Length: 474
Ligand code: FAD
Ligand code: NAI
Image (cartoon, rainbow, N blue to C red; front, side):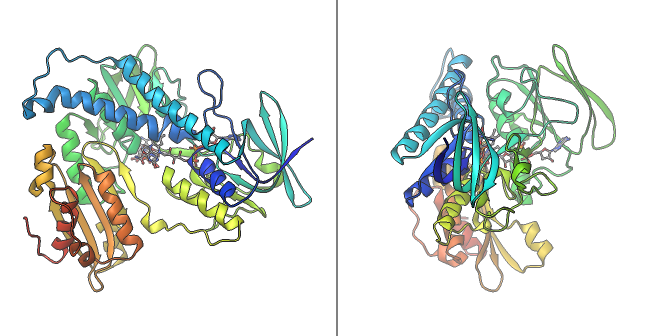
């Protein structure tokens, strides 16, 4: 006997579990299926984000930053630390606890919202009588029927061709978050978001870190001025970043050897104790049985969707990493909410122009909207204003004055087109810019708003003033 639901969600990452909660809030009967297992084989909802992504990486970034501060920055504040030592087991254990708290939190939310949770793999079995039959293969096999299906099956790490992850020597994000001993020499392929975040963690804990990046420019998607400032800071910290490389053979026995040519075309052979491969992610449709019901994928393997996350099939929707757009947890969540609201006949809304990006390194990098190079390329006339944290009182008190806030505004209307930050707490500061852009504010609007003193947010106000060449503190 099958159980019938209004909405069945496949995948309980941030796209799926949030869609399920919103659908339940709107009065639908909802099931959510997820196959992720914890180390005891039990359910671990939350997807990549909770288990091997956003949450554990931020836990290790925080712990490793405390360690680095205790070893290096506390002395500047007149605090002498003697006998500092690293208990890596405990640090990793704390990270695992944080993950479990989040898994448990989601299970609690399912209960609270009367969502039926199924632990196992969900796949399409048939489409009949205007509904879909979904099989769950778990400890107990079940069949569900659904009027609407939301696919939120996420993404998997991309491996180098013919270099599979063994998670012992050649690591994806999963292995990178669970290394048992600090590697003396750590190699990373790909200087993207994971490369920089994971490289920062292990450098702070004592590894000699080399990052090998194919592109000739550092952080090509980031505003050039901000990327340059960040690169300077990372190199000063000791991250070795090689740009414009071409990776050749990768072999591993007790250690990993990477053959590559550098930007000048010279051949090199580097040996590492561990290698993290972070060269992007691929959509995950494995085991979904998309072909049984004729669910269309695009040429890159993503589930093909329109602007509203509608797939090629009636009443089948897809959200998050498995569809086009940035692979970010908050983008997945926004799409999940919007789809639940569309199913309810409401006008769900996702503004792709105001999705913020954050790289949680130190300094943090955060941005929303267009970069200067994008505006130039599009031929948009703009004004720019920047303000350095060096001239911000709160940053000086914190002892963290690297970086700047940069505003880009339309030359005629003064509407904010992009805000870019490299510096302390950029992840929090960017929220003001997102709100401003969502309300289509001008840089003058921000410049006229009272910001608390002393606060890092004054740098945002000053950068807005700088658009009109009238900073007060610089
Ligand atoms: P996922 O989180 O991948 O969830 C998909 C779920 O579906 C998984 O639990 C999977 O087991 C399940 N599933 C798949 N197929 C089936 C099936 N057939 N049946 C049942 N279940 C299935 N983003 C940010 O915004 N901020 C960050 O700080 C950040 N840090 C990151 C750090 C790392 C190391 C990584 C790897 C990613 C990070 N991301 C971050 C990206 C973020 O994790 C993803 O964008 C987000 O998890 C996507 O959510 P999702 O719901 O689409 O998919
Ligand atoms: P990425 O797309 O951010 O970076 C991959 C990098 O690898 C790029 O710079 C690319 O040029 C390079 N590359 C690709 N192939 C290569 C090759 N063969 N040799 C050398 N370099 C190569 O991908 P990453 O870091 O794997 O992260 C995946 C995604 O996960 C991110 O794009 C992001 O969407 C998400 N994420 C988000 C985080 C956040 O929001 N703070 C943190 C971590 C991940």
